[in-house]
Image 1 (cartoon, rainbow, N blue to C red):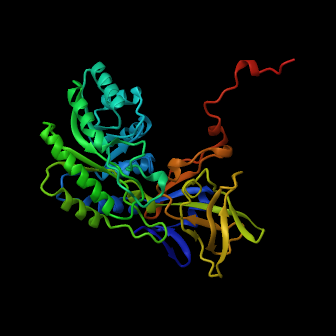
Image 2 (image 1 turned 60 degrees about the horizontal axis):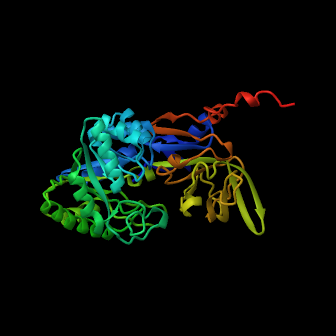
Image 3 (image 1 turned 180 degrees about the horizontal axis):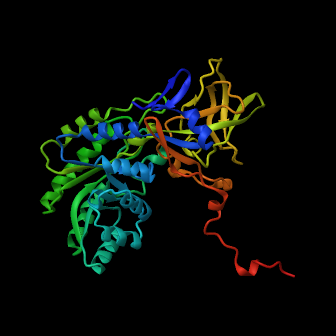
Length: 422
């Protein structure tokens, strides 16, 4: 369930008209529903009630401070993949002992910050990273609590760019090689082995791959216990999908039930890293029609948002539903919704049935809460859009729209270019 609905032909976010917000702040902008975010987190987290677990929101899906603060107040943790994401999580008030640090390219400075902050655990992805972390922990007089990220080689039905658990992926350590890495970790004086980690991919709409991966990790857990390792955490990552179009992903209760049955009597804390399933359908991108045109028997609706604002359709050929902010009650026609970017790949919806939008109309790009703003850029020197959070009848700008001055912040012209050469 989300809190975007029509009331007398006008699209509302909770109890506030989307058109009203657009009049106040202009377009384009990302719009999030407080009640939807909160409800999605509670439904997911409560599905595992009775099972020792920690729900760590994946910051790569959406890292706005206000949203992180909301989830922190709900008791959520954080899955981070950079020093910047760690900084954001801490600034939002997420407890350090609820933060796990993933990613294949952790820098020494990021490791130092994480150790100093007292995070729960590093998900280590290579032998070299493991040795580097040991050295940094030694220099700081501390011990690093770690899990080894395992690549269980599970086949998935999702876009190849977001599959992370198959044999050729850059992520994790092949499960067949993992015992050697655990043996190395056990020998390192400033490493404390406490977990097994795994993340097989994103936007998964079937439970079987999760269960298959968990069965492989359960067998690994048994072998590690025989090695004398005290494994207290099992991190199954995120990846549970949402409905963008006609997908039918499992409900979190169904997902949790399958994991419980597979875990059985084994005793450890389950770490989960949901992102999209919490925030994806809790946000939309609102844009305004600039022009319409026809060319070579194709119709184009040109709007003021582009691939720099929402790159998923261009990058993954992803589907986002297109809805009018004001219902027109007219016959639909086939058109492509495109942006102002100087790229043929700049589209938000291609050859889609949609209302006969005209200049000035407001358009809602649905299910844009995850990997929307977090992947936005300044390509074509376009300021990034505002972000807005609605709670009931109130709205707050939680990120100001960038200005032209923001675009050049940090840039400078060297002295030898100040004067024209003779």
